[in-house]
Amino acid sequence: QEELVESGGGLVQAGGSLRLSCTASSTTATYFVGWFRQSPGNEREFVAAISWNPEYTFYGDSVKGRFTISKDNNKKTVYLQMDGMKPADTAVYYCAADRVLNNFLRTPNKINYWGQGTQVTVSS
Image (cartoon, rainbow, N blue to C red; front, side, top):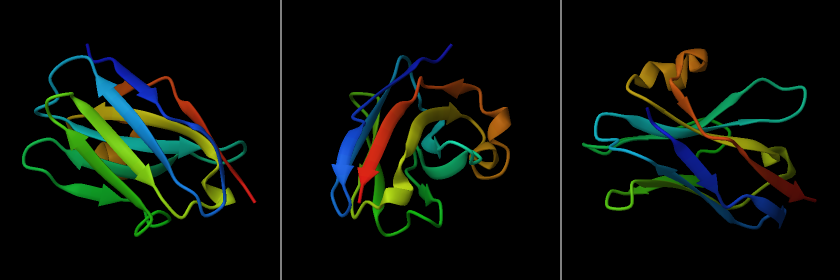
């Protein structure tokens, strides 16, 4: 059983930055770990994912060039650095972990592990 604990959400002005953290409770060597977001009335949206070893990164179209996903192997923590933020980035952000990349890209309902979510609000 994998437990994911998120932190780092909050309020930021448009153009500002935030960094989210997701710490896993056990080994993630065979997992992809990533982020989704969901705002009221909208479907869950893929944001970014990273593979543990070797390291590959994947991004949703709406955040490419603005968000960066990274990890610290020793801390079993994945980070989402969000720069150039827009009001449209306002959502609850969820950390997720799964062994199958396609679940992040196409079938998030099949993802095995989710964090509790953290609110990110971008004011205009």
